[in-house]
Image (tube, one colour):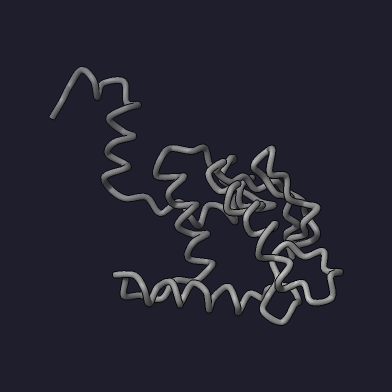
Length: 149
């Protein structure tokens, strides 16, 4: 449901509306800009059959791209990869959150990036590996630097 007007290429972000029309900003890397510009200038118009769509991403029939179409794109990409499991949009979201947490990003920041209303919803991503627990313990415990075992 992304619209062209919500895209801010200069700021590398897009305004997204989640459940309950909750608004948040989603950031993307500057390296994505040339691809977005190329899509907007050279490809999007080929799908805008009525030349009236506000949607950022259009499907092959001219309407908004569907979640099913996104799953199909992911599945097609998977067939051309060495991975042997199915990837879903939710799996990408889960991986994003887990990666942030594994790199010591504050839970409140992850909550904001995911657009969760409550911290409890974000805590499902806090399954932490023993190795990460050990690393955090060794980094923060007052005696860890003094006594190495």
